[in-house]
Image 1 (cartoon, rainbow, N blue to C red):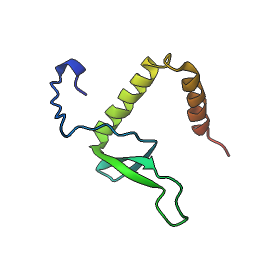
Image 2 (cartoon, rainbow, N blue to C red):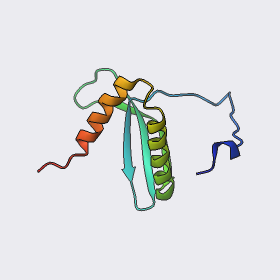
Image 3 (spheres, helix red, strand yellow):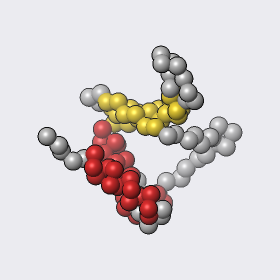
Image 4 (cartoon, one colour):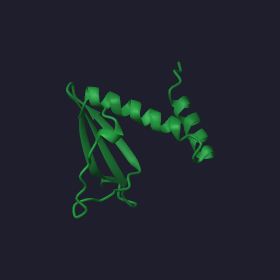
Length: 101
């Protein structure tokens, strides 16, 4: 991944928007990783959608690996922010990685 100060980023304010996502779904193919950012919908019926895709990002496997490393670095660099929340989330993540028989 390129160093941040090597990038010269253009941002079109007329087309730019930030979306809040409270769910992430990942789909894979042999060539790509599809990352769907979802927003929960208010109470819905049993057969009605309960989330909508607000953004979908498609990346190659090598780029996905770089993103995972970047996210891990950001997480480790910022763990002192909201320490209580971070610790409870880390326990949850570590618990989900336990192999149970």
